[in-house]
Structures are given as structure tokens and as C-alpha cells.
Amino acid sequence: DIRMTQSPASLSASLGETVNIECLASEDIYSDLAWYQQKPGKSPQLLIYNANSLQNGVPSRFSGSGSGTQYSLKINSLQSEDVATYFCQQYNNYPRTFGGGTKLELK
Amino acid sequence: QVNLLQSGAALVKPGASVKLSCKASGYTFTDYYIHWVKQSHGKSLEWIGYINPNSGYTNYNEKFKSKATLTVDKSTNTAYMELSRLTSEDSATYYCPLTTVGYYFDYWGQGVMVTVSS
Image (cartoon, rainbow over all chains, first blue to last red; front, side):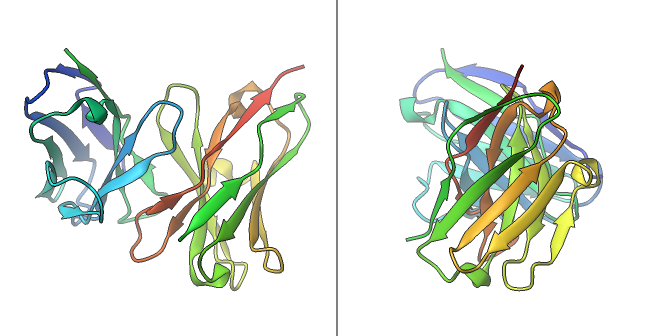
């Protein structure tokens, strides 16, 4: 199975700040990577797919980058509604696997 | 618009089975694969498997092969996941997401919480 290692596990940032979340795959996943946002009590929502493509309706302050085994999610100008847990997920191979999550809080 | 409506929360006894449902609407049911994902409380997400509603073909995560059984009812546009021989380790929230355009999960059900307790 492909192991997805996300960092940091938790993060505290101020409004307007830029935030970066990293995701490391145990092998090359050829940009078959998605990022999801999950708010408390809600189901995950797709933010980014194919490592850097923004899902329809997602604010442009979210962006994704990376290739090979290393990927990152960037949130520019943090807003209060961005408080959530973020997960990366690979879909290059079965079984599909997720990172452990990054819990983002406001400072 | 695509909607996935999952059944309500379940409280089940250890050793029993439970069948969860995921009713799809807003698209042609047989067009997209339906997946199932487990989220234990406060933890990450685990992919259980998927079913092709058109053919009934299933693909399971090896970890869940003896635990979960995926089926569909095309007459009601509903996907099901039966979990057997339940233990406390099966207490979790279960989601049914879709893959439509690509291989990523672009639509999700609201989730159903399963609690295994005597």
C-alpha cells in the first residue's frame, strides 16, 4: 500500500496568514493526488485534484503543487471559514490511501 | 445536482451485522462508481472499496475483504454496505463518495455513524 505522510498534524495560524501543508507519498504517485477539507461534523469536500487543479467553486486562495512523492497545499490569506482538517489522498493505485490529516486552527 | 443520502445512525451489538444505505439522485446511477470510506472518531480516512453499479463488480481493500460486502439495487438507485461480525473497532462514521470525472472523490454522502456496543 502507498503510505501518505502529512505534516504538520496540527497548525495554528492568524487571519490573513499564508499556510502550507505537506504530503509525502511512499512512492511516486505521478500527481494523482487530491486534497480535501473537512469541517467538524461534515463530510470531506474536494479542494484540489491532479495535485494542482482547483475544484469548481473552491476559492482561489487555495492552491496545490508538487510532483513525484512530494506535494503541498497552500492557503493564502487565511479566512475564519478555513478552520478545518485537511487530508491528502492518492488515487494512483489501489487501495486508495489518505494522509493522517492536518488540523488547522486560528491563533 | 448530485446527491447521496445515507441512512441514519446505527447502534448495534457486538457480533451482529449492519447494512448501511446510500441513495443516489441527480445523475444516472449506473454511470459512476460508488466507494465507501471509514473514519474512526477523530482519525483519518480509510478506503473500504468500490462497486460499479452497472456491472456489480467490486474492488475491496484487502483489510476490509472479510468485513464489508458492497451491493446495489438499481431499481432504487441505492448502494449498500453490509458490515459483519461487528466489534468496537467498527465503531466509526462511514461515507459513500463518488468518482465521476476522475479518480478522486468529488461527491460525498453526509456520513452515517455506527456505534457497536452491548
